[in-house]
Structures are given as structure tokens and as C-alpha cells.
Length: 327
Ligand code: MTE
Image 1 (cartoon, rainbow, N blue to C red):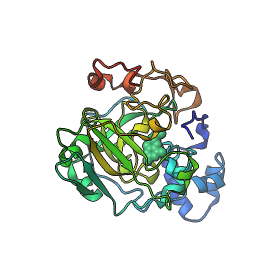
Image 2 (cartoon, helix red, strand yellow; image 1 turned 60 degrees about the vertical axis):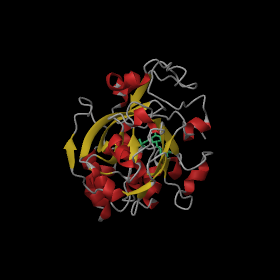
Image 3 (cartoon, rainbow, N blue to C red; image 1 turned 30 degrees about the vertical axis):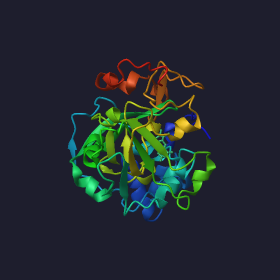
Image 4 (tube, rainbow, N blue to C red; image 1 turned 120 degrees about the vertical axis):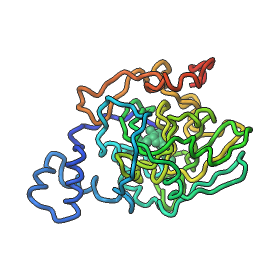
């Protein structure tokens, strides 16, 4: 199973956040004529299915945040219901709407991250300790999927470098690998794809230490919904979305480039670096433009920016490298 180029979802199928929250509140109670009327455009049955509160016990918990100088400004945020109902999380199904339906089973507490490999000593961090390690920042980032769609997401977290410093990597650590939670009893849908689990991703150490790389605990000021990688994931905004492993349980420091899920699946299609690059097409489609999810159909198309628009901050990481070869 390979990442596919998705077909468009009609914007009429999804509603703005306030409406959605109201509907969820309502759906917990009795069905009334008023909401049935509000739901008419989407279909009440579909609403009940899409917005049922199956997104984890801590769903909706607010996080205290501070503003960040590293935020991207000026672009319209993608409505939360797209961010939470149009997902890639193959452990919970290969269709975009499946993670929202199936990820409720992810056991997000207790949760630890094991730190292994080239470190002063192996460590284990509890999620609630990590949440308090640094002030949580609101960081609006562009999110560009290799499938040529994009969103603008207000994440919550702090720089991955702050966490890495706590891990005390040795000088011999040149790469860092992130491994996602995997339990086939919980993630029954994982067998629908040919991926060898757990999901694995990796960065070169200097990439991981770049302040833009985010250890992410939330979005829209609340804890991450399970389908977005609760309770903690990585976000690397200048790379295609698949570099951002969800629901991570282990971090390994290595002296060699780790094997990574999509690169293993199809090395000619998904490079280890996978920096957003409009000049390097995917073998099956162009990367020159993207479809901004959540906007009216006629205004979705936009030009893809080198390094997803973060070039002034990250291009120096790749000085002297042939980015067509190291795609
Ligand atoms: N992490 C895990 N564990 N499993 C996955 O299937 N999909 C990746 C990435 N991280 C994936 C994952 C892909 S292909 C993308 S585009 C992003 O998560 C999607 O993140 P989002 O659903 O929050 O938009």
C-alpha cells in the first residue's frame, strides 16, 4: 500500500469549528428539530458518525500556551474539523476518515518515551513530565503532505531540541529515529497495509536540533486528538508530513541513518530527506502545486514553496547538497 493522491473532499461536507462543537454538544443530548435542520446539508447520519466523541479520554483538555516568535503568520488557519477528520494514520486505517473513527482505542495514559542508543544513559520520560519541561508554545505552521495537499495548523509544543538536550546524546549520535506506538490488538487496521510496523521516521541530528522542529502535544490550544498523534508527535514543517511520526514511544540516537517507513516501502518515491521541494516531482505526480484543504474549491490551489516556505531558516542545513539526488 502506497500513499495515494487523494481525491478532493467537498468543503460542504465539513463545517466551521463553532458549528461543529455545538453539534457535538448537541449530539451528546437528544436530537432536536433545530439541529436536524442544521445538519441537513451534511446528512444527520453522517454527522452522528463523524462527530461522535470517540477521540480519547482527554480530548478537549486545554493547554496553557505562550506566543512563539517561530510562528507563521498571515494565512488562514485550517478549520479544526479538517485537521482532525482528514488524517493519515495507517495504524487506524488507510482512508482519511478512518483515524477519527478508530483511534479512540489508543491508550494515551500512562505514556512514556524511551530514549535509547548513543546517549549518556538510557532514559524514560513520562508524558506528564514532558508536558511541563518547557512552556508550551502556539506555533502556526504550514503542513504539506507528499500527496500534494496542505493545511495551516496551530500546533502546541516546544522545540524538539529542548527535549534532545535532556536526552544527553553522545557526540557519535548523528541521526535520531522516532518510533510510534504499535500494538496490533489496538491498531487492528495496520494489517491493511504492507508497512512493517512500528512506524519509524528519522532526522539528521542538525535537522532535529533546528528550532523549528517541534515536539508537539496539542493543536488549537488543546491536547492532540488521538487521530493527530496523541499524546505526543513530531512536526517538521519544512518536510513532507510523513516525516512527522505520530504517537511516539521511543527515540533512538544513532550513528547511521535509520531505516524509515516510507523510504523502506518505496525508496524511489519517498526519500529520507523529503524536504518540500517543488522542483522534485513525485514519480507519479507533480509537487509544483498543492491543494489547501478546507478552503472553497475554487481557491484551494496554490504554488508549493521551497522548504514549504521555511527556506530562509533551514536552507543552510543543506548547503552543498544536491537536493535532487538527496530528495
Ligand atoms: N505516523 C504514524 N505513526 N502513522 C502514520 O500513518 N502518517 C504520516 C505522518 N505520521 C503517519 C504518521 C503522514 S503520511 C502524514 S501526511 C502525517 O502524519 C499526517 O498528519 P495529520 O494526520 O495530523 O495531518
